[in-house]
Picture 1 (cartoon, one colour):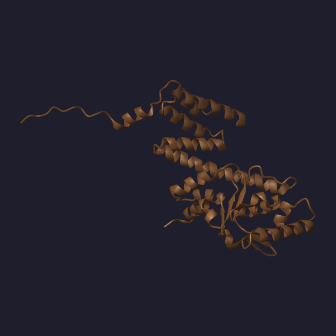
Picture 2 (cartoon, helix red, strand yellow; picture 1 turned 180 degrees about the vertical axis):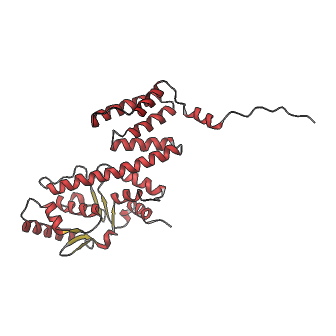
Picture 3 (cartoon, one colour; picture 1 turned 45 degrees about the horizontal axis):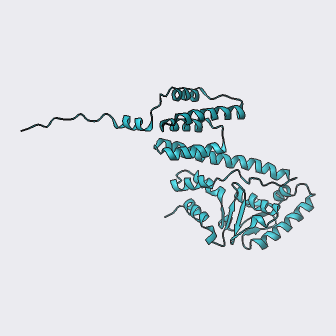
Length: 284
């Protein structure tokens, strides 16, 4: 039987076959799929933002907080009136999806019919999450949260975005780091390289990921690529932190430069041990 997060991962990839499901992409360029249509092209930005905020927060939101966040440049009464209009229009665009009362705005059934890629990423980090769930979480990351989506003049929304973008990136980094180390420990070289590179696309100054790539590339006999990886690490640390690689990272570079790390074939031979000596046949 599938777990809850496995079911969510499967539903997320097949949401087109479930017209009553709102499929929401908030990682990377935002998308809102509803009944085969991408509402992100049709809904006004502030109505989209309202849906994104409720989905990312994962619970019903206070109407006053939403009005201040999305119409903070307006007087209070005008902000509340704008929120009422937006909610009325969203009810028509998404019939049966929103639960709205005098105080709060949320999704019906605590969002049971909403599939959000951020939730797939969060599920992958739960203790005991199966391998398929963790890989689904890694695939869900398409870039920073709400990439290129902004509401000029809405300082409250921009502050909220900055916090949530940092949180989402931290989740993606933690997942890729776990997958990278697990793959390396299991000897799954191609997977470890893939996860290390995905990690560096999020944080190019992650020294541990650079070191994993240096080790694995050198083990594959790609010494030049491993040394180039050290140069990329050095440049990224200098640019982002004004720092140099750690002593451990430099020591790894020295070993690779001296061609002291064994290749994968050599490591296999070492693990296999020496070939058994030939034994003479005894004639009776």
